[in-house]
Structures are given as structure tokens and as C-alpha cells.
Image (cartoon, rainbow, N blue to C red; front, side, top):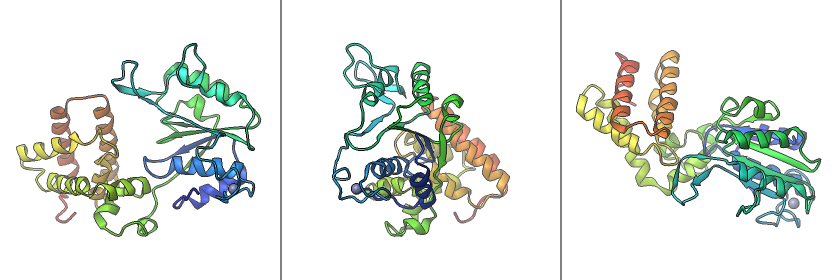
Length: 303
Ligand SMILES: [Zn+2]
């Protein structure tokens, strides 16, 4: 049985409109894949929406009419990929391929009612893969639904995004997450994303470390070497999932709107730079410099 926390409006919309080409956008951990699974179960449930959890279709796990692809995290030789992407052979059948491609899978009629393919990380596709997916989005089989998942509509190629109905999932207000935890640090780390909160609850020591790092960094921003050390330690963790950087947002809440926008932009800048393997020392210096400028005279006494 799929339980979705929050996102009631999105659920109503999906149940009523049942789009064949859908883009679910929103931050990591907010519940996009969960909602996609709920949608897929609802489409195939004997009772319709919401999925009953008991009929023959709802009892299938994994479900034969559900399919999911995502960016490949290892390259051909089995090493960690520097830039994980969805590749063409995941979309179109290739000779000698080890895995079934999306096109092969979607060709045959569903075993129950509808076939639902989820493309997670739709913003991380090779050009060839995107073009192949585009053809499918233009003319999906009548029984098929394609669900793209990405951080935002802008992050996905325009040609792909324009063929989808976009449903944005916003972070949930803290009170919606209090049934899971009422620890303020955990809720702050979650940033309204149930997936982040569940991770945090399983990794309390890591969250505690991040809390200390962020508090320390902002407190010692003017102490050159110390600030740099703290910034570096924070950046070491940024490539891990979930990234601790959104946690910094907690500290930005008191800034005036323009400065806050600047601070939030800094976060995505740092995340991108980390993914592009910019050197940590350089990035730490940049982070401290930018934060100093943003905070200037409005240093928060209490965070
Ligand atoms: Zn059912």
C-alpha cells in the first residue's frame, strides 16, 4: 500500500486528469517518486483512485505494468560515473544490451489496465537519449503514461518539458512532518521533504554534525582560517545524498528577501560546482566570501 504524505492537491489533479505525459518537479526527497508510484497504482487499481491496496493489481510488487529508469551511476567498467546520465540504450533497444529498454518494455499491452514508465532524473539525459524520449512523448501508446521526474521544469530540456503537464511538489510545512518527528534540528534538515526527514531519522549523528558545522560556520564567518576549515568540512559532505547545503537555508530565514534570494542562489551554485568537481579549497573560500558579503552587518545573533 502506497502512503503519500501531503500533496493532496497534486493527488486530486492526477486522479482527475490522468495525464499521459507528466512532469513531477520539486526538491529531492519531497515525494516525487512516491507520488509517481501512487499514480501508477491508482491507474491500475480495480477501485480507481485512491489505490485500494487490496485488489489483484494493488497486491503486485514489483508491478508488471510499472517501469523505471534513472541516471546510470556507474560507467561500463563499473567505476562511479563522474556525471551520471540516462543513456540512449536505456530508451531504445540496442543489440547485446543487458537491460530492457523503455521502448521494448512499452511496446506490449499492459497486464492490468495502464502501463506507467517513470523517468527519474529527467534533467540528466544525454542528447541522444532525450531525442529518443521525445519521439515517445510525442506519440505514446494509448495505454501508456510517461512520468518525468526533475528538480524543476526549467532543468529539463524545453522540448521535453513542453510536451508534459507539469505538477510541482512544494516542500511541506513542518506541521505536516511532525507525525514523523518533532525534533527541530531534524525538521530543519528535512526542509519540508519527507524523504530527507526519513534519511535524517536514520542518520542522527550525521545530522548533528551538519547542525554543528552550519552553526559554527555562520558564527565564525569573520575568523579567516576557522571559517575556511568549517566551510571545507561542510563541502566534503555536499556530494552525499541528501546534501546538507539546503540546511543552510534555515540560517537564511531571517535575511531580507533580496539577500535571501542571493543566499539561496549561492546554494545551487555551490551544488553545481561540487558536481563539476571544482576543488574544495577554492569552493570553501568562495562560500565564506559570499556568505560574508551576504551577511555583512546583519550577522544573526541567534540562528
Ligand atoms: Zn486496488
